[in-house]
Amino acid sequence: MKYQDIPSQWITPDWSAPKNIKAIMTTRQGGYSQAPFDSMNLGDHVDDDRDCVKKNRAYLKQVLDLPRDPLWLNQVHGTTVVNVDHQPIVKHKQEIIDADAEVAYQTGSVCAVMTADCLPVLFCNQQGTAIAAAHAGWRGLQAGVLEATVATLSCPTSEVMAWLGVAISPKYFEVGHEVRAAFMLDDHVAKAAFVPSSNEGKWFADIYHLARLRLSAVGVTQIYGGGECTFNSQSQFYSYRRVAKTGRMASLVWMI
Image (cartoon, rainbow, N blue to C red; front, side, top):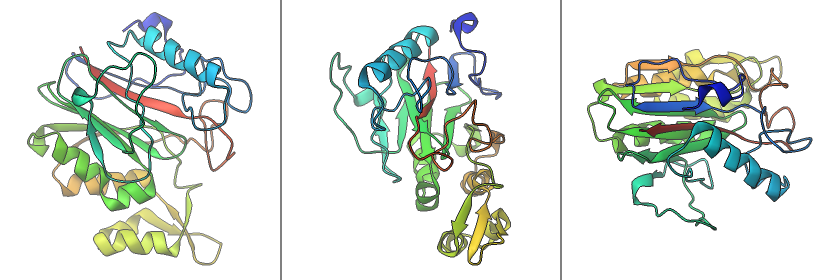
C-alpha cells in the first residue's frame, strides 16, 4: 500500500489482522467531486457527475494499489452475501448486484461496501485466508447481515476479527419505537442500546453496541473500532441524515 500517497484523513483500521490483510475506510477528502458531493464521493447512484465518480474510483484503486477493482454493490439493506472470487473482472461495465456484504478467499480479491451513516464492518480470519465487508444499516443489522457474513467466512468464529468503521453515533441516531421493538424481539439485552429521546415515541440507538451484541452472540469476540460520528463531523464524513443529497464513503479489505 502506498501509505505516503493516501489522504491523511482516511482511516486505517486499528486491529490485529495478519500482515497480508489490508484495509481502509475513505472519508470525503481526496477526490474530484464538487459540492454537495465534495470531494471523494464513490457512489454512482447519488446524482453526482459520473465522470467525477469514475475519477474518484480510479484514484482509489491507484492510491491503494488495489489488485483489482472493487465489486460495487447495489446495497438494499438486506442480508445477501456475494462471493467476490466468483465475479468476473469487467473492464467497462459491471453487472449490478443487489447485496449488502461481500466475502473472498483468494489473494487479489477486494471486498468493499459504501456508507454515509450506516455501519461498515470489515472482517478477516486469524490465518489471513478469508475476508469480508458488510453494510449494516439498522434494517440489515436487525435482519442478520452480520451473522450471515460471519457464517459465509466458513471458519470458527473464535478466529474471526471484525472492525467497526465510522457510522452515525447514538447522540444523533434517532429511531422510532418499532426499531427498538424489532431488536428487542430478537434479544431483550438490546434494550441497553436505546436511550429515550425527548421526542415522544422516539429513541436514540447505539448502532455500535447493537453490532457488538450481534457479533458476540455468534461467537465473535475480537471486535475492534466503533466510535466517532458521521453526522457530527461534516468536514470529514458524508452523512445522509445531516444532508440527504450527499456522497458515499467506502470501506475496503483485501488480501495480498
